[in-house]
Length: 454
Ligand code: CA
Image (spheres, rainbow, N blue to C red):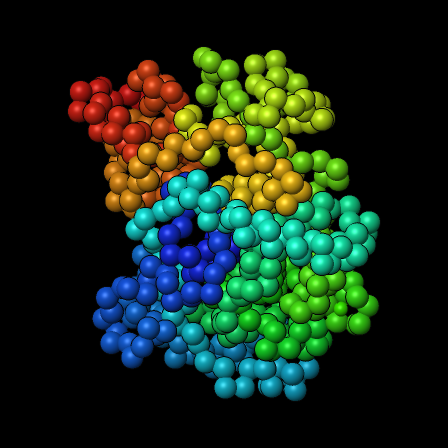
C-alpha cells in the first residue's frame, strides 16, 4: 500500500511492466517469471531462485555486485545493529531472537529491485489483464458472500464497497494469488543490502512489531519480494497505520480474516482521503478540434468547466456532481478513450502510484457495481516501445532541444511526456504525449531535417 513499492511488486509478479506507460500492477504467483530470471549470470547460481551475481542496472553504488556481496557478508551484524531500534518499539529480546534466528539474506531480491523489463505493457493490455470476466463474476460472488461484512464496513468507513472489492480482486485475485516470500526475510534483506536500506529498515522493524504483537504469524506474513503481504497487499508500515481489528478478536488479521482485511483496506482508502459518495472518474468523449494540451493529467477544473469545452460522458449521462474537480487523462493517447479523473482517482493512486493500475481498479469497481465496459476502443494497433526504443525516443527529444528533465533513461515520466507534447505541437501532430510507436516514428522522420530549438 505504499507508493513506489507496489510498482516493485508488479515487476516480480508479472514480467512485463508499464515502465514506459506509467506503471501498473497485477498479482500472480509466478514470482520466477520476472525479467531477471532469464538474465545470464556471472555468479554461477545453483538454481533459478538464486541471485544472478550481476550489478544492478540502476547504477547505484549499493547495487554493484561487490557491494551486494560485502553487505550480504555483514548481514548478521547488520541485523544485530537493528536490535536497539526494535527494542525502542517494544519488541522483546526474546521475540527479536526468535524471529531473526537463522535469517539469511535473499539476494535474488537484488535482481528484482533493478529489473528493467525489455517490453512494457500497453495500458489496454493492463486493463484487459486485470479486469476480466472471471474477476468480475468472482468479485460479485465475494460481495454477495460477505454482504454483511461489506455493509458494516461501508457504514463504518464510508468507502464504496466495490472499490475495496476491486483492490482485493486485483491485488490477489480475492486471496487466491499471494506471494510466498517471507516478509521478514525480504525486508531484512532490503534493510541491509541494496539501494533503499533506510526505507526498508522501517519496514523490517514494522514487520517485527507485527510478529511480536501477535497480529499475524510468520506463516501469514508472506508476500512479494518488496514486503507487501496479504490479500490487499499491505506493507508493514501501512499495516501499522491502517490495519484494524474489525471482528474484535484482538488481532488485526488482514490476511485470514475477511472483516479485518476489508475494513483495513477501507480504512486505508479513507485515510488517503477517499471522498464519500463520489466516483473515481468518468469515461468521456472529446469534441472535434479539442485542444489536447489540456489533457496533461494535472490541470484540475470543475466538471462543468470541462463540459463547457464540449466534453460529455461516453454514456451520454449527466455528471452527478458538476462542481467536482477533475483532470483529463488519456491513457492510450488521442486515439483511445479519455477520462475525467476525480479526487478519488488520486486516492487510488496513493494506494498504488500507477495510472493503468488505478484505472483498472476504478473500472473493475464500476463493473462489479453493474457498470458497462468502456465505450471507446483502445488503439490496439499502436506499437508498444521496447526499452531501447524508449531510450531512443528520449534521445531524439533531447537532440531536438526538448527538456526531458534529465538524461535519457528509458523511463517515460511526466517531463518526457511534456517534451513529447511540445514536439508534437510544434510539428502539427496531435499533442497527446503518448510515447508509442507512432510518436517514435514521427520523431525519427523529423529529427534529421529539423532545427534544434532551445
Ligand atoms: Ca481481528
